[in-house]
Amino acid sequence: MIAGDNSVRDPRHLAEIEQTIVGPPSELIVRFFEHARRDNQAENEQKKRIDEGADEIARPYWKKAIYIERRFKGQIDHMARPASDQDKREYRQAWEEFKANQDKPPKHDIRLLPGNGVCTQAVFDELNIQTIEDFLYFTEKNPDILAIFDELRPLVEVAKRWRTFMKPRLKLVNGELNGDH
Image 1 (cartoon, one colour):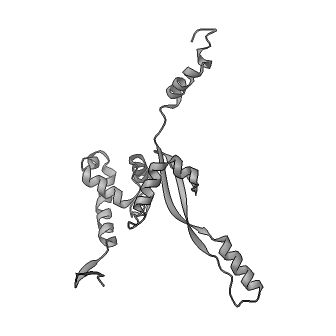
Image 2 (cartoon, helix red, strand yellow; image 1 turned 30 degrees about the vertical axis):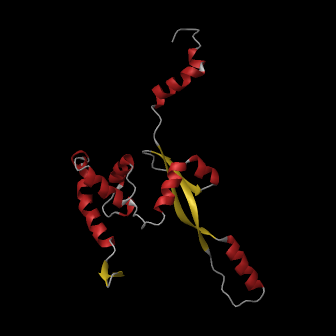
Image 3 (cartoon, rainbow, N blue to C red; image 1 turned 60 degrees about the horizontal axis):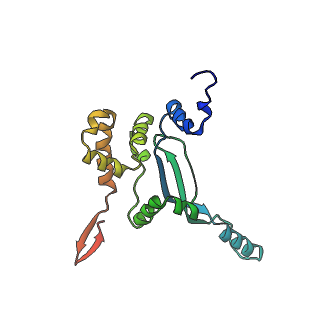
């Protein structure tokens, strides 16, 4: 920079300087999910019944609520909060994906995988792998990845055993699906 040069203060150059110092912006990952939330209305109604002499024991009540989680790729810490209508409009693609997957069986968080430590979790975060099912799909579609991230290799077999354990046991009896007991 030359003495007296004001180009640093020029807003057109600020973004360029920021990218040079900080680096390019990371990919924003947005996820909607169901979460249990205290049902204050039900608890207040119960409290009113107890105050009126009902023979009930006070207890907490819960209801499902839709939450949103926003984080940047590679970011470990993040906060979740109740999703607003504005969030659903702003992150329409993530909202549509959430609605499309609501009726599907739940996926299992990759942090539940036995043997997953802080270093392998960092690899999963970098690859944006959040569930055991996603990990298996990813390794089946990209088998070469295990040559690059060899620390994931032992977890593949653990994940396959997990899938076998979690897979629903169904059989066809007289044309109807029944659980295998």
